[in-house]
Length: 193
Ligand SMILES: C[S@@+](CC[C@H](N)C(=O)[O-])C[C@H]1O[C@@H](n2cnc3c(N)ncnc32)[C@H](O)[C@@H]1O
Image: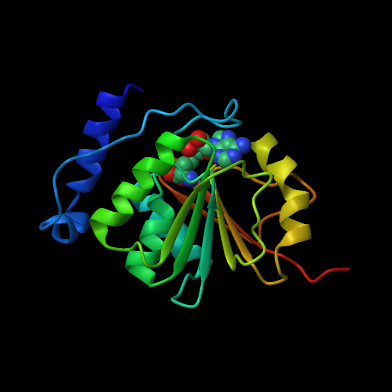
């Protein structure tokens, strides 16, 4: 997607009713950095719809006590919604600097910079130990590669929510919610053996 069309998509997202009020007094200019990713993406950028974002946070039972990590955060919409609507703290990690630039811009526009952090980085190398909720919209094979890291580094009781893709047969989800053509899965990290 070109920078021009990303700008207009961002402008449309910012004009959505839930965000319009928060942005009413903010400056109108959109700045998107054009810096190439550190390496090839494991997953292409496809944003989760706002309805699915809200359902993911609801399924995870996110509250103000949570620290929500979105691994491959795109424009940061899941982390930003967790902060705005549930008062949670959030961290978004994406390998594409353009996405992180957008996420920081939006977080600033909607006034949640005190509760969210966005970092350029590889999700397989990220330090995720403080998360109480992890959100994913990746691919089946990427989820399966990520699973050992989640089970090793996340505290027992941490909730993992994935949009559309499972963790493979040996870690079945405990809840599944369908929303139109989308599916959301929930797991809880078990106690260590
Ligand atoms: C399908 S999008 C999901 C975006 C966001 N989580 C959402 O649900 O709207 C996947 C994102 O993962 C990022 N990504 C791909 N490979 C990555 C990696 N190895 N480390 C971090 N981010 C990655 C892409 O840049 C893209 O923004």
